[in-house]
Amino acid sequence: MDAVAIKALFEQVLDEVSVRMAEAYRQAGVLDADHPLSQAGLSNGESVVLDYLDHNEAGIALEHLLYMVKEPPLELSPATEARLLELCEVHGILR
Image 1: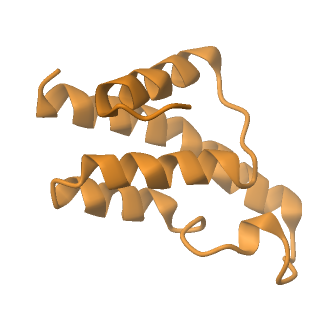
Image 2: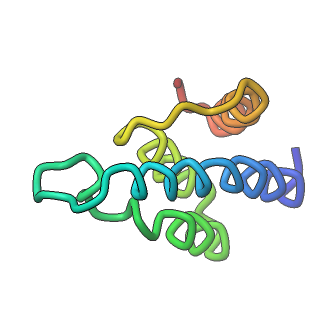
């Protein structure tokens, strides 16, 4: 899979993850320090992932994306789960 296709997969997954993350923050309201959404890199996770991709660090971008999905946790559609799994396979990461 070439770099353009990989970036497209990331963007497709990020589209849904960003929406789900925003919903999680809206539902959570005011967060205390030990809330899962209070962790670093979640509220700005999309920009973190895209920054890693812009610096040719797709593996680290994927690890951050997986962190974004796991920590709240977020429930993704089957189509997005399949895309995320494809990214994991391409990068040799077990999910």
